[in-house]
Length: 242
Image (cartoon, rainbow, N blue to C red; front, side):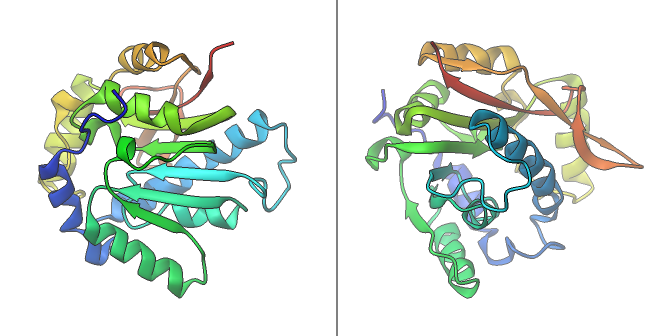
């Protein structure tokens, strides 16, 4: 299972074509730049809770290894490194890895970037494993989740996010956001979104227990924010059962 192919080549090509302006907050990845602070707020709270850390600490991941799968050009890897982690980033697109390495070098950050199939890279022993807005793009969800679980150290923490497969997400994330140019056309395929119940089952199959999901919503006054509303997008943690 762990060596099954999870990369969907068309998806890798699509996101690789966006690599050049991935770090431009007004470019094709502008929505990710808006989403990143929301994801980081959730992740920071999850890290503090899991390791019972000091919420005021500047580097709560000091001494820990973090793996970000589907890392793109490093939008999450770099903050993880600044939080103290020894970070490895994996992506299916060589263009993204090249852009990630260049940007990290410019910021003086030592991040280990790898291009390839997560289950075939032999990665293991990570305290924190993240895959945010990725599972909807893979070819084999069970194999992908199994590979993530296999990379996690005992007592480790996993953080996942995914658009929910609802009428609202089809209307706003696919038909609305893509037609309005808020995200590049072809980024989302609604049928590949996973519901929280489906993700919970996938995690349970590899011995992981999922937390109650927290929604990522949008409003004209607050923009993107954490919410109890799961209609568009959600983010969760998972830990080994028992």
